[in-house]
Image 1 (cartoon, helix red, strand yellow):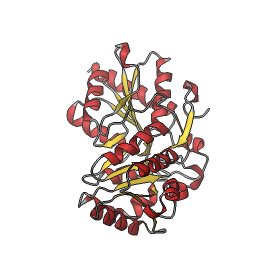
Image 2 (tube, rainbow, N blue to C red):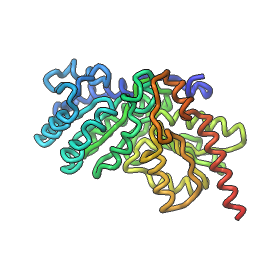
Image 3 (cartoon, rainbow, N blue to C red):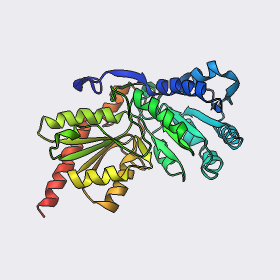
Length: 331
């Protein structure tokens, strides 16, 4: 069964398509927006912008470092540039240029990395960005976004251009389950709570996820409910600046946390959450993500299952966190 189907989630557009369509809309609204692409516009979906605004679209070829130099120059000249490529190429090939030409001078450049995570499937490990969040969050002055589905990606793209300063946003290749069926609230730095907060019932554990794993967290919460385990679910769409208030509240009110991400555990969402928890309100934290390994070429669903990025893996981690929580109470 595909991700989210057991709880009735429908699949929407790939987040790269939602980004590309929204970018085209923003181009109609703001003539200062320009796009610099690394010869992959048909994959990143900046082709939608290029077809309508060819005079504001610059393809520099397979030269990511040059792409960043052009984008930073456009920003310094008063334009609002977006530079994009596959996330693995953008962050890994041009990191030094991003660091010194965008982060250091704090230029208003937006970066979008598509084909993030292992769900790109058959493209294989060379094109799977599994360390991009760690690299981007390490940069001073950068905001880092990982939206959960088509509606939230549209909202995130608009929020990205409203925000002043450098931003990195990751998008995906496959279709994502629709999490937000009635509009997607999106405020940079403010997590979205997706469980039924109105019930007032005490909750046992908090599931904090980003990107594709938000749908997995919702499915895990439904499975846990069958065991009479009540889970709070947070869509942590902004990894930096992370919503410390939501994390501290979750720690204090539920006493156990599980994070879930389509990324390496080193330097990802789980690391950011744990940093807040250990400093502010220590509780057991379990993490679901890639564990110090590359993936391989294969079908998306099979890869998510093989590398432990499914609802069942979040359920298992929740049980472990609850065991640790109970052990602490008996001391």
